[in-house]
Length: 101
Picture 1 (tube, rainbow, N blue to C red):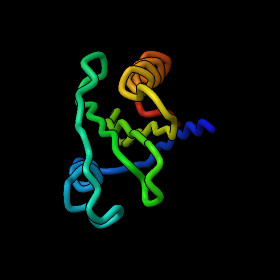
Picture 2: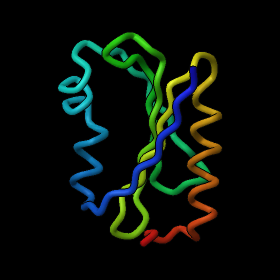
Picture 3: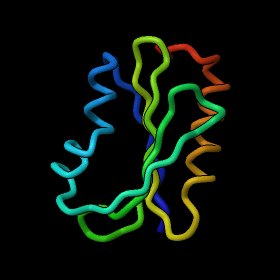
Picture 4: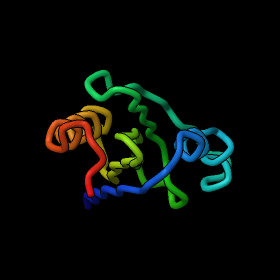
């Protein structure tokens, strides 16, 4: 089964820094071993892949556009980085790199 989610939140840089920190990840998923990656086509975007609380393969990409923090995530077996990167790039391009209202 494949799940894809997107989220837009009004935030500050500190919110994004915490959401993507090892501290926040370990608080949400204790003991999780994650792999981080960059999304070169989306300025400031960074992602991670790893297990959720139930051991399912998940991934997320976070980035900011203006005052918004954007998140795209999925739960799927197989490659995740390319799928997440393509999704983040599509949203970035579709929104013109601005904060959607």
